[in-house]
Image (cartoon, rainbow, N blue to C red; front, top):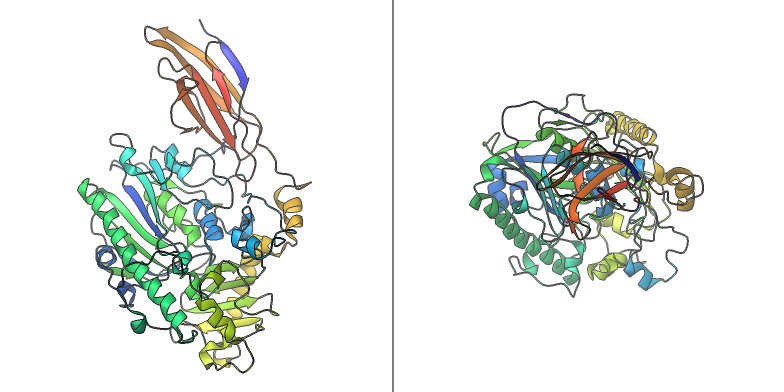
Length: 566
């Protein structure tokens, strides 16, 4: 007996062309990301010996240390949106920090802070997926432990598990895995007065002080806490490596270590300089490939997802902003950015900034679009770090400052800045009017203009109500809902152990991710699986099919349950 049924459920139509998986007889490698928050390369392996980090020293000795890795934004949520989608935040509307979650600190300081700022989600082009979805479709077990913060609600099929308990240990036997572990112990908030103090590895009197900071007790305390948090973080890195080693997996796993942007102290986080955007990046291969070397290739957060896909033998979509720098498809299409890393600074909580910057690894060009405000704009969250008051004091009339502190003392900004980070690593000598660099400045200025035009930079669409109404959720600014999917199924046969079905799912919403799960009853449902198109056959006795469809930035379609045989 054959029965065909069509029911409506929640689903998105996958692209007509799925990523190409390279054919290779070798088993796929596992990939682990060790991600830390708010940390510049203030590490011994990068030349800063303030605190010891033996586990990262080992990782660098056994891997490749990248010297020109850059965040796309000097703050976490926009940067993470670019990592997970492989698209620039200014292209997909995720550049404002945060676009869908008001800051409690800002509201506490001013209950009306967000009265003219709408809540919304970024909306990437229809072909864009959160890249782990492609890994799952190829058979990888994907876990996130546990920060998302993508500026949009994550489709349910992106991760096998995303929580504080998510771990590669829970994969199926022999299943390759992609696992993200996030460490928040270096976050900006860990320098707040009420934050737990880590063991003292460096004393306040021994910390190095960047030249743009005044030498005050509060500055020294914040720096000491930052470095002590880095030392504690290194212990965490060692624990994650030991887990792989104990399981006999270190020799079949690629390990990538990086930070989600620069240091969480003022003039680091939220600033488009190296202190805000240059990050550590170490890649360890299981076979000792290039162990102990450095790589000065300019890489950006938009490249990280395509690189993981390439390492897994999956060809990334060439419409993505990112370019894989490792794996089977490394630079196969060429680097459209030609060795440049771009960054942006926009609204931070409820206060607007607008900066665009480009670096070629050595030279940085900065353009300030809002010049009638200080460099350190008011930010209630950052002001919980006591040293912030000492920096504000540098703007007071009669304050004693050094030439290197001009940015902290300024109440206005120049339209343009230019720095040679080799000769001036703290970027305190603005060379924008230096004739010796005129040609180089002209070239970087043109490069930045081209990037802004190419991405259709949505940071310039203000107020944000217009951004939402005309660009993200046209025509009325109301969030669209993913269309309900159609599920076709047939009964294949009935055996002693139960009924066997085969089903397909389609949806009229372009750009939807489709996930499904099966169960023996409504209360006994299995995990979410990625639907990659084509028919799926069920195991015996799976009488219920639940489907979820979700285009990024839209409301997911409500879950539909297909009751087999009823």
